[in-house]
Image (cartoon, rainbow, N blue to C red):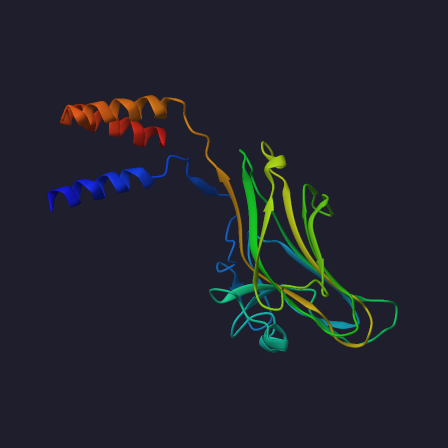
Amino acid sequence: MRAFAIGLVLAVAAVSPSFAATTERVQDGGLEASTCDANQCTDPVWPDFVTSAFSNSTGPICRAGTGSGNTDCSGQGSVPFSGSTWLRLGAGYKGSAMFGGGIVTWVEQTVPIPTAPATLSFRLRIINVSGPVGEFKVQVGGEVGSPGPAVFTVTDLTPGYASYAPVSIDLSSFAGSSPLLHIEGISSQMPVGLLDSFDVDDISLTTVNPVDPRCANLRAKLKKAKAKKQKRKIRKIRKKLRALGC
């Protein structure tokens, strides 16, 4: 039994992570902090915009059972991936073909990216309607009203998104800045009728905290202190490790 216990301790030590912890940089990536009434949902950390010509706009922030017009949000089987709130971008009903039109919908947030590696991830589902051309894109950088270059683009015909699918994008090149994260869905003005929609949920942008060079030295000292059963020294070293975030 003792041999088994020693083996178990050694096994746990072998798989203990030596890498630094990640930090979430996006605020309210699930949009659950949104405030909803019978007409719409708003989230203070996600400014949103909808432009449409002679069409009933939907979203962009939806909550199951309320907000943004419950019928519009749940139309075509649109649902959240998790929780009760999600984004429904580019969706709606085109009521007229006059003067072009269509629906452009977006949300955005300025996100700090102090270190690399940095990874943007989210869940995406495309509800495709035969006929109109829809596009979804993520842009990073730039400023409000003029977002930066696209780092991810798909259309309603892109395969693999009939149900919620994970998307992961490397944003390490933006380390050391606080770029604008702009998420947009577009539905074409033609034909009249239902339009494509892009459902998005569980938005996350994580960075890896840099490892303090003192951590390795402290871990070596801790190992020696444990071997000599120096309890007081062990406590002091562990306290320093916690303070450094090792």
